[in-house]
Image (cartoon, rainbow, N blue to C red):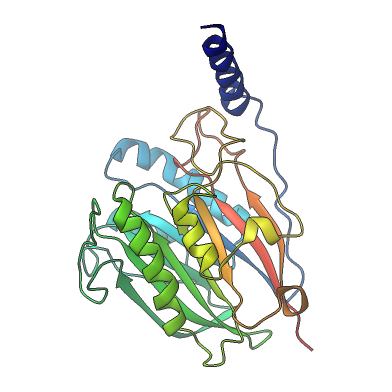
Length: 303
């Protein structure tokens, strides 16, 4: 009994340490001055339809936060038609790519947005995480349709071409997560912009699985690297917050920016400079979404 009580006390203390509300000190968002570098953002912005009144209240603050972050490329999840219209009307500097998971503009989108002044679009598309990836479909034991939107982009200042992908794994189905992760790893390589695989694939999104889980390891064993672990300047903080005032600073992330560098040697040609989970912004004490935005600053080393 005493042992059980001791274990319970330790768990409660750990939970309190992870989640006790603290002051929300401002976090610095550095400006990028190097024309060989760019910022990549992933952000599950939470759909509008589950709380329409709340969405109308928080949407401007969330958009202003994105503008403050100044991403050159971003992947947004849970973008429903209401969000699609709002983002299109207010992010004129970005080209927006993606379709709804239920076909055309129906259902949630995994959008890719990039600055038109910095990148040139070569190719783009969407596939479903299912047994029939090029048809509107639900995979395995998934609770809903899941998709990946991808774009082959050329960085104008360096001429570097790479593949950028944004996804959202299922939140319930174990097989849907496992097979979805394998399908992503395999399919993205077939879409690789360079046959000799000398430029990186950047895959981001809400993976609905914790860092270190068996699903996470599928990506790592397939050759992807976690930007959190290879960034020169990094941090640890949970990326999901459940729309609460609580902190999750010891909780592993479920939102990732993963990099498959192909035949590159990262330390010589492609560098991840910074990884950040921005957890400080609040509206009436609550986050703007039930996930925090995650960004990385990356740069190419070119002659």
